[in-house]
Length: 78
Length: 78
Image 1: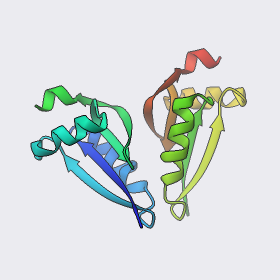
Image 2: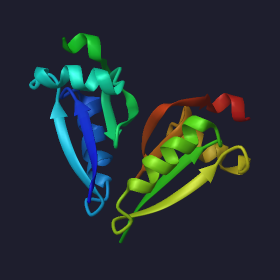
Image 3: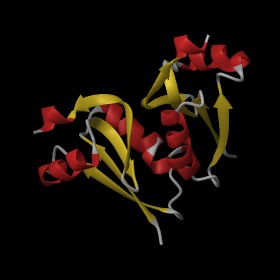
């Protein structure tokens, strides 16, 4: 069974770069990668916050949150 | 030809977590992943700095640096 990896972003330049270079570099044989644009999918903000996402871009792998560089704080997307 | 991905760390808990969950999640069919412990391989500090690494853990994919969470500033390793 694949592990879930969710890449949260907000369309910012830092986010797009991380998505293209990092999120797409994950092993899709092992990981089910989902890309979530929190600016467009505000219904997912609570879930991201619950996981511990403080800023975007962030990658949550099996519930572990990795903040990648810094694009925007989660607060700015509410 | 594989793309080079270098994971710079310093053995800190944040680093170890990122190494296990993120660096090892990269697609090894596409990426040649190298793990560099800057505390033990100080000769690589200049290279990391030149790439733009400011703190560890950091992942440099094809020259693009992604700082992942925050373990320690590069300055602390000199």
